[in-house]
Image: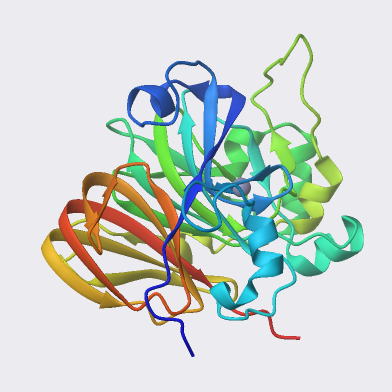
Length: 320
Ligand code: ZN
């Protein structure tokens, strides 16, 4: 079968405006000439709310969802009906609302057959002393409901200190929020189902955003084990090899620090690759911070050169 030397699928990111977004996607990346209030770069996405186009090569102009439908062989003939992952860079100038996501089973019943959402964050940058909201302190569901109904969110939520290079897996049912000043690479199931737990009493366009009180109480995991199970300190990893950050039912995610030169096999149905720091080349093609691409099935060996940090991921095939 002729599947050697398949070209990388270079993606055109979709940039999103958000009330909490900043300008780092303009000042630190090559996405836009100007702009404010830009919160998210959907770097690898086939989601209907932001379907990336292929930027060059024989599939130039096609959306990722089209390519996934028409050329499943590029994705190792993965059985999942939709391209299952979404990779974003998030610039939180302001803190985001505190939220929780349902799992597949709950979303299927209550959200029109949608997928649930498992996600993970790699902290690309953060201020000194930064804390993320991950998990909660309630011991029982009754205590959770009591704290929510009484509006005692500061008692409820758990804050954990983080620094650049930390990685957090957020399973469905985990209360979580990105805080101000963080720059994050998020890898997630391709889903948008979010229940807002608390928005710090903020007004957007003069009114508070909707809070999903009952859904939040229903889907939140009690007791909470998120921090014990989900946090990885990924600083100081050895260079020129893949380091697995997480492996779950939906995806595997790796960090790669290239220094000089290395060769790694592309042995997966496909590999998402985002360059989060530095620059270099992949099989002779220049790549740099902020580039997002998919290395298809049959891509062969990946020969990296340069000085850069990358996050890679692949999907775990849906079993039915
Ligand atoms: Zn989330």
